[in-house]
Amino acid sequence: MPAKKNKKIKAHYTDFLKETLETLRGDGLLLVSVDSKGKPNTMTIGWGTIGVIWGKPIFIILVRPSRYTHGLMGLTDDFTVNVPPPELSDIVAFCGKASGRDHDKFKEKGLVAVPGKKVKSPSIAQCVIHYECKVVHKNNVLKDKLAKSIIAAYYPKGDFHTVYFGEIVSVYASRDAKRRLKS
Image (cartoon, rainbow, N blue to C red; front, top):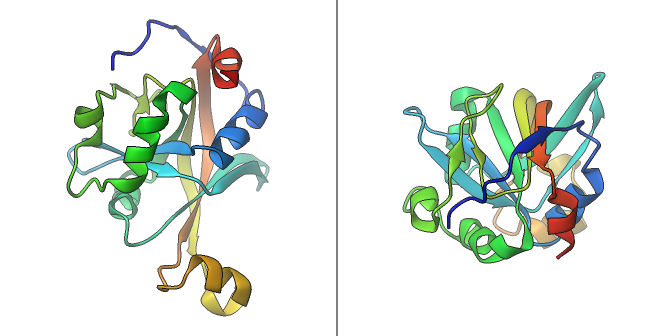
């Protein structure tokens, strides 16, 4: 699927907050990291948020240790979060089921990696909003500090997430991002 020729504009991290969080709660967002050779991998994320911590804009994401991406996250200590338009919903679903251990998702789905402006991890050209983030902190979800109802509902196999706090260092978007996300 070729990327549309659509110049991206610089944005403030709050400019597309509503659209980003709505997409996160819907089909999900695409997280991108790279391996030691710079090969990109993407996975769908459905849990995360944006806020201010330590006086910095932070994108918080959760990745399970069993995921291929988890092993990549420490290689560069950065990542991008990409907001896909509705027409990518099949790709988002695939990226949430297929592992980068077994699939080159970029190649298989025709995703175009665009070099990061301030991070090593690329963004995805076909997406309409991009957050470049540098990891400033990470910690593991602690079973003994978590509500039993959450453990029962989301961790029946005990695969507790690592929580990554990424300082948002750059945001850019398609000029028509808000319109495209409404379709």
